[in-house]
Length: 160
Image (cartoon, rainbow, N blue to C red; front, side):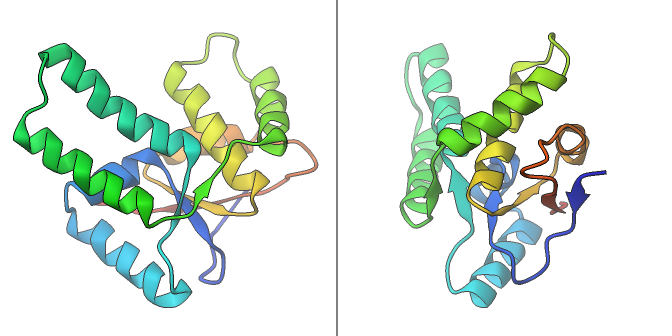
C-alpha cells in the first residue's frame, strides 16, 4: 500500500472536508489546526483545488437561492480569511502528471468528487506535503495507484 502516516515534522495541506469542519468551528479540528500552527509556526496549506471547492460551494448556494444570506456571508468571510493566511499549493505540471497517471488507472466512471480528490492528492504530492482529510477510503484508493515517482501519500485523518 502506498499510504503513510504524517509525522509531526511533515507539512500538510487540508482537504476540503477539513476546511469545512474548521469553518463550522468543530472543536477537534480547531484544536488540530492550533496544534499544527504551534509546531510549524504557520497554518496548514491548502491546495488550489480545495480553495476552488470551498468558494464554489458558496457560489452554488448563492445561485440556487438567488441571494446569499448573512450566515453564508459570514461563512464566506471566515473561509476567505483562512485562505488569505495559508500557503496555497498550485496545481502545477508535476501535479498534472501525477493526476493523469492515477486517473489512467482508476475506473473510467469515477465520480467528480473522486476526481477532485485525485487533484488534491496530486497537488500535495507535487509540493512534498502530506494531506489531512476525513475521507480515508478515497485517498487509500488513490494511494494504491500512485506513480513510482511519488510512491507514498502521507495521510492524517482528523475525526470529529
